[in-house]
Image (cartoon, rainbow, N blue to C red; front, top):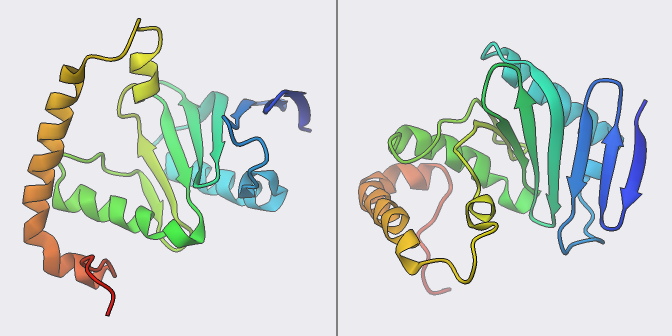
Amino acid sequence: MTTPDVTGADATLTDTTTATTVDRGRFRDAVTPWEEPVWRTEALAWVTEGLAAHGLVESGPRAVRLRPWSVLVRLTVAGSAPVWFKAVPPAAAFEAGLTEALARWVPAQVLAPLAVDAARGWTLTPNGGPVLSEVLDGRPGDPDHGYWEEPLRQYAAMQRELTRTRRRSRRWGFRRPGPAT
């Protein structure tokens, strides 16, 4: 049994096993598949299967972040760091397959997903550390620009390494951007 306790743009859903906090940010009116009980049930069953394949079990509260471009769920997992479920709309479903491919092509730069359903645009990934907003939260003033130097260096190195994968990327349906013909 799930009962909503709605506060402003956010809601807390509580059932007998898992408390769920829903954050809509500035997008109070955004419609996402999370509101569809059948979709949510299918997604959470897929998550449970993906966790079980790695000997993991969900054990505590969920933090759901709803945006027009994705549903992101931070899952508490017994004996492990959190695990993340992400679902994107059909127009961005390629992201799941791309995430899986990047983990093969540049494994030192990208977390390997625990599970991927490329057709539905779903990924289940291990924790990669704090999200940027958590890192910057509570710091006075603007962040130091030097903070970005190392991540940008790593991103550039990944791009250079990926230039060798151009032929493979075309097989995945990614095309080189260019002028419309």
